[in-house]
Image (cartoon, rainbow, N blue to C red; front, side, top):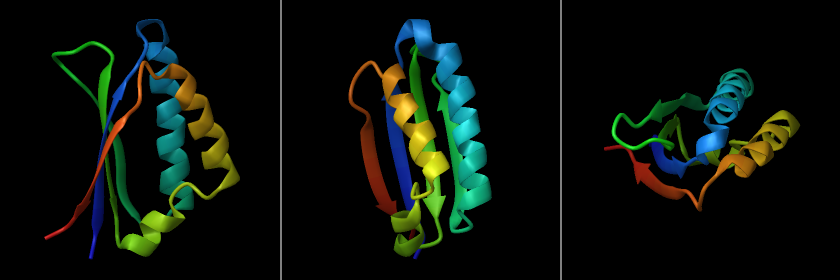
Length: 96
């Protein structure tokens, strides 16, 4: 069964451009290194500056468990924490 994730991120106003650049690099890493990932996409809010939603889907729980295990992913995702203006909100969902 596919597993989805929706994560809402609040980004510091002066770090938005760098965040988007680095997140796009992270998306490329996921696409290349995680064959069990169906999509890993970033969306910017039209209504709230600095608010982003990450939508992810994995073929199954095992693929989700492997998500982010590469050294490249760990290094890039650790850097993204510097851009946050607060803790992300993460929801994990099961496909129907």
